[in-house]
Amino acid sequence: MAHQLLILGCRTMRDGVVVSFIFFMAAVLLFLAAAHVVPAVAYAQQIVLLLALVLIILAPVVLVSTFLISVLPGARAKLENCEH
Image 1 (cartoon, rainbow, N blue to C red):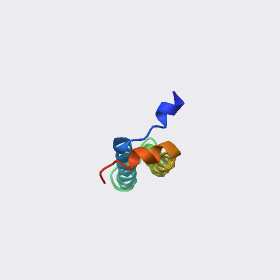
Image 2: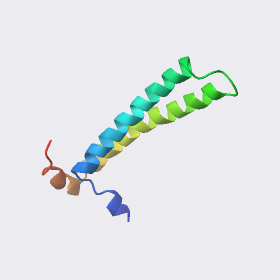
Image 3: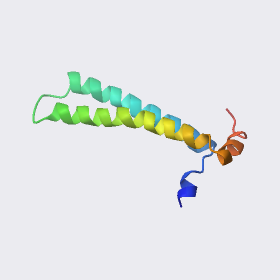
Image 4: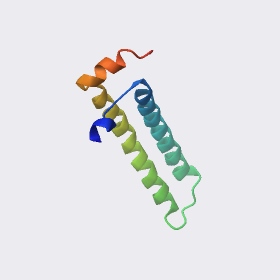
């Protein structure tokens, strides 16, 4: 089962990059929302900031893990057939 999780194709490579970008943009928007939109009621700002911090940490984790999976020996042959 773990071997199936490490299979990387053209679509999953693109999906990893897109998910990382979405996490990063969502974190930036949450930071801005916490600073300018969310009221300081019942720790609402802190909750939004915590969500933003989690997303800002997950964005590079997804990107780095996608890269590390792509440099595995079996993945290189599959990625050579991709249209870039």
